[in-house]
Length: 167
Image (cartoon, rainbow, N blue to C red; front, side, top):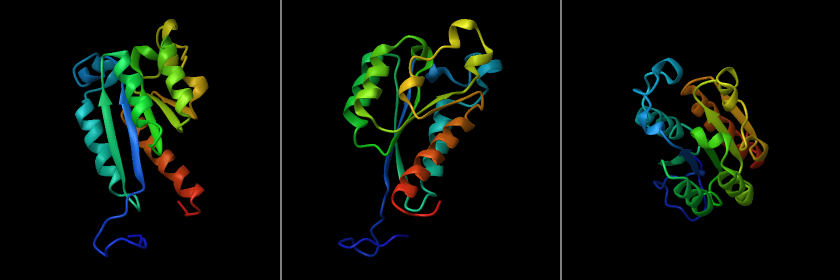
């Protein structure tokens, strides 16, 4: 555990929070097209991320939102994105056409990883293009729910390295 001046000995130091955003229909994970998306539910993914987040030193928090309403996702990016150490976003169908989400991510300039459970590049042609990709650090596609874990590790390592810690 890190010690920080001004904190009581038993107070926990936290690195900050990662904003995890999921777009339309991701609330149906586990039952929607399991051949493409698997049987893991969104609740399972978020619970796993929260468990993983507590194991970092110092730990991070997970701030999660899933919505089927584009404006709610834009609001979350604008309101919670600037103070986050990073954003993990699975924009779902909005990947391919939401300039509003793209512009919100660009405006907050918080390090962001785009995650897709299925490999969007191996699916229908219309899924191959992401309007989000040009404004994020990277994209993880086709690795299932593990893509979220990899994104979290990357964002925490990035902040730790900037702070001079060894990963």
